[in-house]
Length: 359
Image (cartoon, rainbow, N blue to C red; front, top):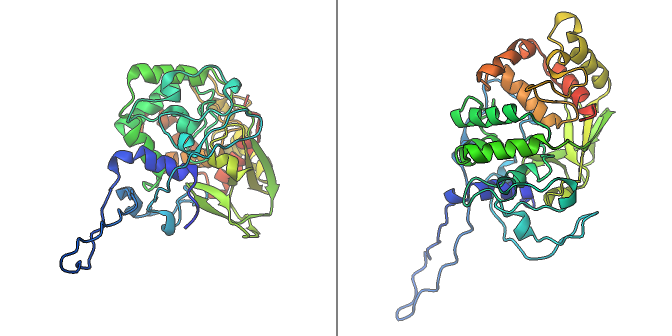
């Protein structure tokens, strides 16, 4: 079984109230006159029902809708420890116990963002988790979720409301991050805390954290904690029609280091093709992205920015729109944009958008 990543621990932690703590009973009777030895407790296992849901009728790309392999699906939580750890450019020493605490977001670089409000750093015990636990204190996010830095206040609030009403779903209902948000965060957050968080993240600028390169071959990867990590000693394989977003430094990724970025591998020629789609709609095949998201894809009014943002999440949202998983009224504006997009179009558009400067 793969070594547990911080992302797996997050999912276990956010579902802590549903942990099944079983105690194994000895099946061998003790000899007469002797007391049976105390049975060792089973490891705590959280196996949510959504893991066993059927896949979508029309397959979705597993590089965007990442799911851990069967041997890690039980999300068995390994013991925390109290060993101090360090990351570059930080004077702090934090333990894994701290990093895994969903009510105390690990903040390795407190000087790279303004003082964050309590809902961002601590949430409320037992739920909701701190916003910064998954999305990081500076709002950079991770491939399994979305970067929140720089999102318009009204857009941010509306998306959480859509999670609350289930108007915002996912095209693959086995996606753990969607369940975490819709079941363990959105229903628990107050309107006051929601507005506070939205205002905080809107005031942040998304920093460049992606290195987008066009290639023909990529490292072999597998999903660990719902993020594509290189297979140890796995070599390379053709990229095909995929976008591979993977941490530049796996250990810093495990430790929730907000200054550790991601490599984004895209097919050769995809950025130029994506630019044509984004800027012109390619002779009416779709609507130009710049018409709503602005000439530099930095957003206009309550329309969110998409430049320089994680391609895994951008791809998921395009498929979610296309499959009708996002049904809120404002989502209808995206329907004519995505209805005729092919899988290659989606790869091309997100390759271009991710390659742009985020601010």
